[in-house]
Length: 470
Image (cartoon, rainbow, N blue to C red; front, top):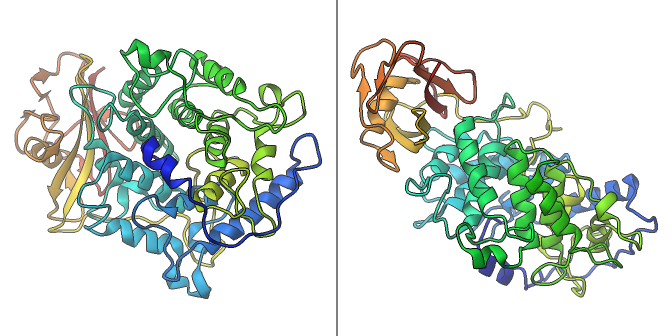
């Protein structure tokens, strides 16, 4: 997660060989009580802590346990407090940040979902995703996968999953000041694509459906419906939004009366239910009342807690499994704890540990990346990642725009800037010139737009938005 459905389903069929604990009885109450949820959460955290490597790691190749950070944050546990054998130098946050900072991560052939997964989990771990290191800006990494020919999509549009998780990461992984760092024009472009891919039954699937009547008429997927709902809601859609209401109805129609589980495309399982409940959580929809309380008094949260082994705390993937499974435990805990697909990091319990860590300045001689959008008001939004080799602790807007003309991915983000050198307000960009009160303005990390000037300071990890307007 995020991942293609083929890989995802295959990965979830094997149970972890961790030995069986005593099975948990279903909650006695009609719906799970706060006390039962608290117990489930505490036990789930304990199990996820047991997955930490002796070197402090969670992340690795393939489908990684790093999603544990999103579950820890939802459960109120700071990643910096997750320490193997009492060795604080190997705390999970530091080890994860070091991994993300390496040039060999994620692989020789990365895909956009690698960076989206990392942004969501870095944020939950208390690592500023745009400032992992002087050379690692996960927001800029995601921007580099913008599809110029299909604006609003990130990565190949056939893998719609990449666009949904772009919206989750770019909107959900906020700044340390709790601002959405990307401009509204970019949010709107993603929202448009997500809406266009909603199936006729109100659900979504991993693949692209937009423009294909047969795909739009195909059955939606419980998992992806939860993720797409969350993507819309973190992008600003309210729970009353018509598309969210349709998705809610889709999920309601998938409920199994006797257990409260959602009957997913590949059968009843913890991961599909976890994704669906996380989607409801992200939209502020209670998964234990109204549409999600069956006539037998069961809810999706009841089902998830019933999938948990206690006192060990792990969750089985299938109801018939006899051992816990790592990904099921992550998805189950995050949902039961009330989380969406990421959560702001809790305050650490470790004395002296800051809530957030991140690169403080550019490093001279190091190639850094900046996330840049250019909106000229014509509806032709340009999105790119700009590479610039720093010569000091900060740089300027003019230097970033100059670099974008030759070192941007995708290319074409900036074709010309006036003035081309020196200082002063930017009077023209990409052939579009200031006129009266309509001038080029700039915003950094979601702050208010102000007059764009070449000499404006730009710091490490800044997300830069340029807009022609009044």
